[in-house]
Length: 466
Image (cartoon, rainbow, N blue to C red; front, side, top):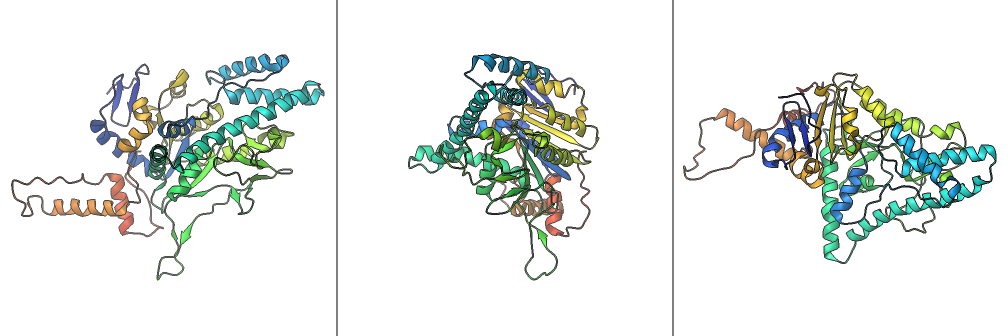
């Protein structure tokens, strides 16, 4: 196997033992047996994380046939600073190797300029502030519009619309279950996302995945500065004082904030009661969005809010992935955020860590540049329209939910019977052909052992490939 990756091809596959570089669509019937067991092993590592970018929201919108929220340029009206903001945004995006500038770059530069006008007491401060409030409100309403279009399709009287929404939503649920249904005795899945929308939360609510984050409270959840290691437990029937971990629990961190996070007072952040797909006139959409909405970048009035709460969120990210025997899977993330890339690069300094990149393409060759000096044994690539397609990925390559213990137990019994009676035909006539499932993978064997031995204090040194 050659060690050189051909980045010019449309489809790029690299695992521990397999490599594929081709412009033709790969044959999923052949590659499934190569990819799925490898991903199954990675999904059962001691520490496991998922980083989701805007590609997931785009994939869901495409499957449901609705318009996704784009990240086009910020269009301001005042000619005095309009072109200067765009020009500086393009330069900063190029310096950070992000490729072409987008809405986030424009907002970041515009907010920096707004702060400068405020310090200088310039007459343009009020004009720019009003424009940014208007544009940021439009951006929030555009995100809500995508959520609302999806929700309305799910609740529509038109069966065709319902089927389209269920189609996209079903693949979102299957995607989330593949990652979140780890054995309860293992460390919880850490979900990180740069998205401002709430598709992840909506999908987890519907599929029954319990999410843990830094917010505490019911009527008005408040962001806590200290991350408490809270979890979900239950008491088995007939057993007192030996609580077990609840299955289907994950931790979620929205690295760039969310459209339903609001600043309230000095140093307090709350999660507002902004429903999924709320209307444009909902009262929890503030008019002065630049001062109150916690999305990256925010309009900071002092040093504390300039880095709060993002310093805490990125500390959670680095703590989760920069540890031995840790793996992270990225989906729909284009490696355009240097502050995220630096943390992932630090992870590579630990030899037992692993990165899996699943992407539709590599715009601006950002993935290629990021991996240029990285250890090839520490990353897996599934890049291209075939591997990045949500339907193809879920149907053929992602491991089946690890909570499906009945199937795992059945495979274990079949495997044991085959080993005990290798030459037995079980009385089956010679003219009858019976098709059986493949024997369990190494990851499934680990699940079987935990099924039979539910002692949660036992060591978890599985025979993993790294």
